Every structure is written in C-alpha cells, then in structure tokens.
Amino acid sequence: MSPEIDPAILHVDLDAFFASVEVLDNPSLAGKPVIVGGAGERGVVAACTYEARAFGVHSAMPSVRARRLCPDAIFVTGRYDRYAELSARLHEVFGRFTPLVEGIALDEAFLDVSGARRLLGTGEEIAWSIRASIRSALGLDASVGVATTKFVAKLASEAAKPVADRKGTIRGRGVVVVAPGTELDFLHPLPVRALWGVGPATHKRLERFGVATVGDLAALPVETLVTALGSALGRHLHDLAWGRDPRRVEPDRAVKSVSHEETYAHDLHVASELAAEAVRLADSVGARLRRARLAGRTVSIKVRFHDFETITRSRTLPEPVDTGTVIARTAVSLLDEVDPTPGVRLFGVAVSNLVEDAAQQLSLLDGAAADWDRATGAVDAVRARFGDGAVGPAALVRPDGLRVKRRGDTQWGPS
Image 1: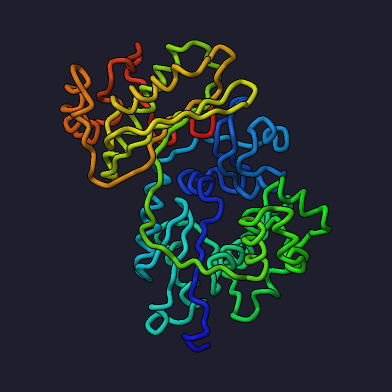
Image 2: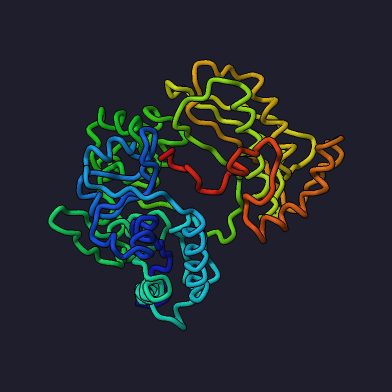
C-alpha cells in the first residue's frame, strides 16, 4: 500500500495494564482472577485480569459487587508509582518510532507514524514492531489499532484485545487494521455504545428511535439527532457514525488540572476532620504541581456525601499558586460553605487554570505561611531523598508518623 493511502494513526493500549503489572511482578498470580483496587465496602475496581473479567468484573465496578461475582478474586492494592514508572518506559518505546505521541492515559496513546513509514514500513508493520518492542522492554502485552482517524484506531485496538472466557482467555489479534475506504464496514455493525459520548442516558434516548448499532444511528437524519440530543452531541455522534474525526495527534497535550481525592472507610462528620484532610490533600497537590513546574489560579474542592450527593466549590485567586499552604487555606475556606454532619464519604482537592513557571505566591502570604513557602524548596529536596513521609505540615503528624497523601493511595477506595 502506498504511503499516501496507508493508514498511519495508531492507538496503542496495554492489556489490563494495572493487573498485568501485578502479575508481572508476582508471577504466582498468573492465570488467577486478580483485581486491583480497594477491597473494602467502599472500594472500586481499578483494573482486573481477564480471568476476573470472565466472571463479569470490570473497572469502575464496586468491589463488593466484584467479590460477589468472583468470590475467589485476589484483591491487590494499586501501586501508582510502579505503573507510572512503566508508563514512562512505554513512552520511551514510542519515541523510537515517532515523536508524534499523544498520551491519553498511563497505558495508552495515539501515535502518528506517517513520517516513519518510508524508513520503518507500513502502518501495520510499525504496529507489530511497536507491540514486539513493548513486550521486550516491559514484559507486557499491548493491542494496537491502525486507521486513518483517532476514533477508528481506538475502536480497532478494542477489536484487537483478548476476550475473557471462563474456559480460558482467548488470545486477541494483537493488531487490527482498518484500511481506508472500509471504515463504515467496520463501524456500522458495532453497538452504538461504542461511540464516544453514548452513555447510559443517551443510549436510552437512542433506543426510542430503534437505534442499536452505529449503522442504525448513521441512518437517522442529523436533524433528528439534534432534536433528540441537542446540537453539539447530535452532530458529534452523527459525524462519528460516518467515520468523520478531523482531530490530529497532539503531542505534549497540556495538563488541565492536578487533583487528589480520597474515599473514606467511614464517613467524616466533623468539620475539623475535613479541614485536616484538606491540608493533607493540598500538600500533595502542591508537591505534584512543583514537580511538573506548574501553578494554578483556581482551587476547587469536591465533597461526596453518604447518599452519593456530590457538590463542588471553587475559588479563583489573583496569582497562580503551587504551595500546599495556599491551596490548603483556600480549600479550608471553601469548606466553610459545607455542612459535613450528614457524613462525607469522599473528599477531593484540585488546582486548575494552570500555567507554567508562574507561581507568585509570596504576596499572598504572611507569618508562618510565608515561612513555609520559603522552606518549600528544602522540603521538596528532603522528600526527593528520603520519601514523602520525611517532612510535611505539622497538622499531619500522627503517633505513627506523618499521614501524607501519596499519589495512588486509596485512589480506588479503602481496603
């Protein structure tokens, strides 16, 4: 196939990434139903092996339900740092093939290999080479979709994946190529839920029109979709159903926000408990901002009550900030508007409206807060050498040491 018509957009997705990493590091788990996530009553499944998927377990499922479906499942607490380490190595592999890499999660990315085809072969040949390189460098398997658009490449990688089965996982095709001109033949038989933007509510609306497949949706006039779903979503889905996706692969896509949140084993009912959590989470958010050389003007909190009602509050500051003290002070002031007495099951702190290398916080601070700001560089250096728990705000001291928030800790609920 000539380079002019050879598909060159790849979507690479590691298979059951978090769970596969746990099996890689502990081979005794191989062939077993492994679930990564919180094992407690409020835990959530982050990922699972295909052996667990065969019982109906899937990501974002409550852990209680997952255990009911698969009583023999082995729950493993997630290790975000390990996943991030392997993700960095994954991107090193990508960089050997093309500089045009758009990471969309730790374990997946879009690649544009159009400039590499004369040297490295067709899009399909490059896909197989990338897959082999990932296996060699990381010891993990990946599925790759190859197409002329990002949307179709993403669906093609799904079609390349293994299939869960109680008799044994069925090996996937590894690489699926959707050749130019065959996009609609590939798309139209798929269930309409395969389209980006079709969630449960939208799916119910589409069912009223007899829509079950992407082809069914494509057959509807765009005016009908606009009336039923609104202009933006209706036109978006109509374009996808006809294989239209003009988006390019965007390397180094800017981070939009940095956040931490935590689900608690027991509801928090006291304002002072939430304030302490605000300090802990803000400290971690600030550390991540500084590591990324970012600062942000908007501080937000997220509060989920015992009945799952969720509220958010935010405040935009005059200057970008990157220190835990300012972020915490703002978050605590936002909590003044929240009554925790019904019980808070989840709390989060986020900073958005980000800029690079623009933190100018000293004008906002005074007294002890200013002292802490001046000490931030030293704190970061100590943590880099001795770990996150080596130093931190006094409010986080407990009898067993500093209770700091590490990225990934109880990210999927308590165990």
